Figure (tube, rainbow, N blue to C red):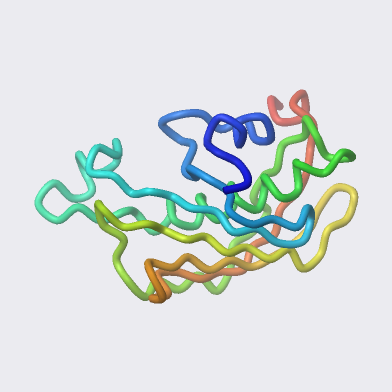
Length: 148
């Protein structure tokens, strides 16, 4: 493990209950990252999604991939202290349900990174099974810009 949850908080502003990654196991700053989310029975969203058949919402799987990508970008010295915002999500495909007890492995590649924007792709796996994949774009801003 490269970074645990407390160390991840040094790079991105997300906090519980919305911090959706637990550890970073591999990273090349600004290029790629592999993160882990341990999906537990007591996740806040399982109370309503769905009480009888607990399933991690697809949008939160995509958000977890984005948070992992943000760690890779915001760990770079020139981007420390900035915020990363979604600019677009496309080609999102969901192949497998993610349920309590699953270990979600998030693999994110950053294809293009400029000073204020970029794009990449992500895949989420449970074991060797693909659960979700998508392409995304993002913009980078400072904290003051994020409050407009």
